[in-house]
Every structure is written in structure tokens, then in C-alpha cells.
Length: 116
Image (cartoon, helix red, strand yellow):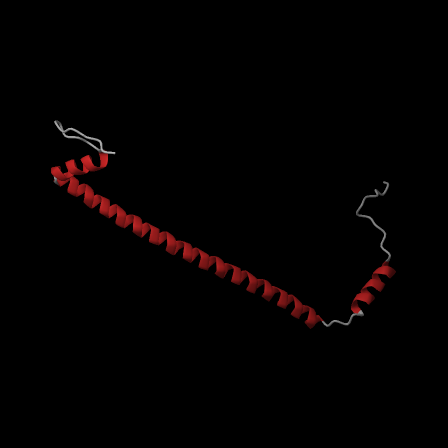
């Protein structure tokens, strides 16, 4: 069988690799410094994420309070309208006056004179 050549077979010049490693290690940075830099980067990322989430939580709380206030106002308006409807159902004369005032209704026999 013939050997097949594909992209996974490459020639490696180990002398160049060795010189690159030697150049890298010649910087003389100890392992604990590398570890410290990685930990510092991880801590900075965690702190920035925490601050962003705290700001989002504050915005969500403010939005919730505003929505809750709006709901409370709408509930009080709803209660007021329910009370008004109950009064109109109980008192027929009040219902007639409100219909005349809001809907411009006229009783039979009444004459409307428009005034400019």
C-alpha cells in the first residue's frame, strides 16, 4: 500500500520549535505571575458582570414600582366607576340627568334652543 499524503502530515522543524520555546521561556516570567494575571482577569470579568446585573436589577425594580403605581391608579379609577355605575342603577333620575348632560338627550316634549 502506498502512503497517502494529506494535510495532517506536515514536516516539523524541531530546531525552530526548540528555539521558539527557549525564546518564550527566556522572558523569565514565573508561573505564579501567569496564574495571578489569569485570576486578576477572571475577577475583573466577574466584577464587571456583577455591576451590570446590579444595574439591570435596579432598572427592573424602578420599572416594577412604576407599573405597580399605574395599576393602583387604574384600580382606584375602576372602583370609582363601579360606584358611579351602582349609583346610576339605583337612582333613575340621576341616570336621566347624566344621559342629558353627557349624551345630549332630550325628554319627550322638551324643546332644544341652540345658543351660540
